[in-house]
Length: 192
Image (cartoon, rainbow, N blue to C red; front, side):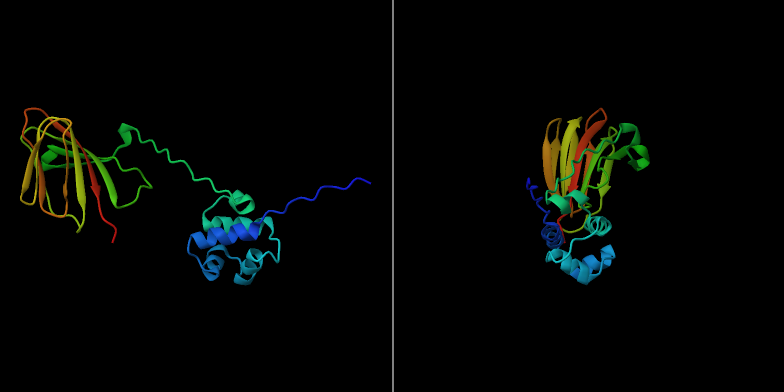
């Protein structure tokens, strides 16, 4: 008689515990989020019971992972690839339309990061009140000549010039050239 090879049972309990702990969740918090009793989750994690597919699906959904992560323990970080056509970029106009900020920040990017494409008409100046404490701004001029002031500091930038400055002080951007100026700007807030 030929002996059938034994199948390795996936370490579902171990994988579940690893994913739960990596999110700093207690058994109670996962129980509440998944609708699975705390006792059942404890038994699954300790390997005392084999969960049903529906139970695994509930746990995976509550943890925000693919079901395969709980079965084989291999998590694949999702690839980020967000395309926003130029026609769908939101913009904000200031100073009677002389200054325009196109919002480049894609959905899902952390709130503390904001990116803009800024165009400033000749002679226009945009003033900004101080942002929250610790905010920094980074500008790269791609076209035209721009004067940037932050607090008591001032710099005149030409295409290709980069400047980092405090955004938590009163600051301004001024087009000092004869053509429309274009700037790539990033605001970065420190975490509280």
